Length: 351
Image (cartoon, rainbow, N blue to C red; front, side, top):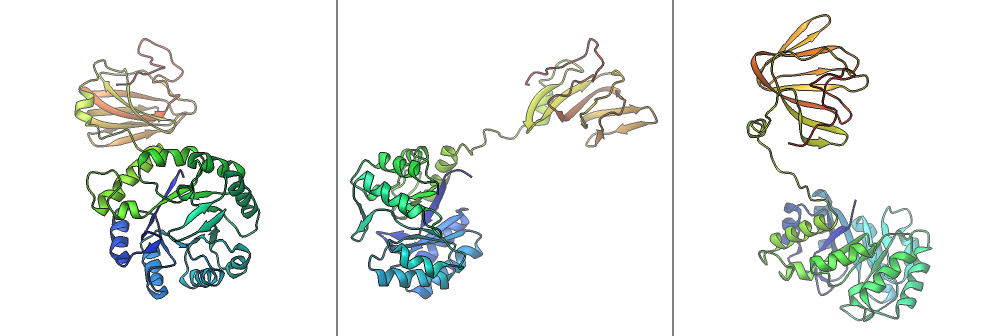
């Protein structure tokens, strides 16, 4: 699925007062992963947030930043009551795991030593990796929440070392506020990352500091980093057919999986043939096509199509002048099947 972007309704490790308003913006922008912290708002309002997140079709996250065990346990209990999908953070793993048993909540605790508020990650890379390995070995721990950009160590080296050391997904947290940092996160092998303050404050590089533009810019950059951006735009059939010069010589205009989309101009009668394994679809864009079969003839008018199953002998005929036809068939399809003659095209060219 690629690198996951988690939008946090938080600033400086606290859920913001106007989180519901920002949530509506995020859902409208198509954000699929949305979270909040266990501090900043009362739990009844966090419960309302979670309900709205899930009703909006997104995955919900609660990140624990409380440092004392009692507060963390209260937050874990609240996560169960609220019904979040994923519990991020926290350091008292042995105490929290029994509370989550059977709740259906995925658990991603913090590796390393966490101090202060906003949180900082202490320790050397080796110490943090050792902590990550220990946590990832626990049953009930589904992944890790690494405060990578809250560490004074080499952040890129830290992320890569933790991801290489564990076989569970790692989410990166901290100041990930640019496409360059998103690319770094992806290259280290992370499963996802969080952005909160940077988007809410309008600091992410975008055309506008408005939250909607911030989120859309982040999503665009994540799609680019994941190589999930389509290079294709609309094509006009009339303009494309105007580029096809020779009759009976199909040209490729697109490909869907192992299927070619081809354009061809038909003039007169073609050759009787069949395809041993390939089905073909003929869509008439302009003119009139007659498809001869051994048992009948079919007329296909403009805007109509016909499917010719594999193994069926057929002979296309352009009726009343030239006919423009879109062909959809497997890549392996030769236009004359097993028959070889002067109009045979085994390797059609792109238009």
